[in-house]
Length: 388
Ligand SMILES: [Zn+2]
Image (tube, rainbow, N blue to C red; front, side):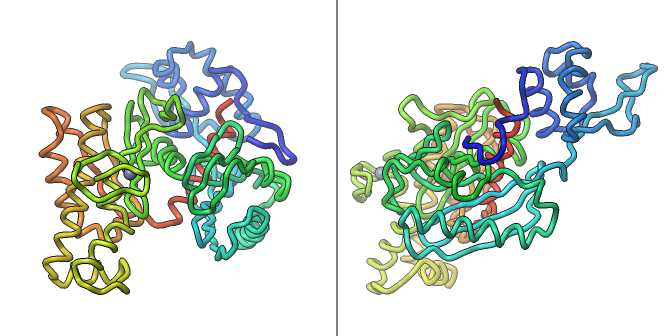
């Protein structure tokens, strides 16, 4: 995290971090329940919550709930004040910046986009500055409550230093994006890989809330995967973990851009689907939208491409279930705009390949608008407020 005009996180002691995180992700929650869940005394919960209440981040709700059967004292649940602070989130794609303003509970309050025509670092920073101005205009609320900016992009990103080690589509290597963006915008900046950020958003504010382990699989240009195990996002000892896009599911399959063969991404990534459809129809000009239209229109050869892609994704997801055993798996991404063409094949292939009880892991398959990626960027910024 890179302070612009601001200091670091709010949370000091581990108890304060635990209390704030629990109320933020699962609240409103009574002190009694918090104490029980976190293994703290009621006094420790009260002590941890006090500064957060004084600063206006948490508040005590009216005492409407009893602490237990027969308990005499009413419990006053602790809850978050969503309007206490707002967060900017920006997702960088190859040709566009997508931005949101979120409140403390990661609810989107405003959105904006800007085209990106030049991948040069300086040009991208300039456009990020313009986008944040657009977002603040669209937001229209109290600007003094907007102090933090989360930025995400695909590639190899070091969240702790804000360094973009490698971005394939921007052709960046070792760009200190966190520091540079903090200097140019004045915000406290957090930078994260886009799939990890989306996973963080689902873990704290979406379907992953309360799940001990959880996986998010994204389907689009790339096939990505974020893993939460024992309540923590898995980063990988070498910076790589959960790369199901590069699991080989067909040893005689197509070459992958990673240098491997028969990877899930080489069969089910958007570019791979378009290439297969072009080859089968003899139409080199076809794009993804036309491929989807042909498949929906009943073109058997094109439908077979989507079937194969869905099967490959299902195999990749089954590997996650077999290896990690997550509580649930969410499958999402802009590629699932063609959800109807994938859904049953993903499920069938998953059920076939998942071993034994691993097949009981529920799959949630749904499309994802690009604004949800930007919300992921805002979510890591919210986390930077809470986590030490
Ligand atoms: Zn590969």
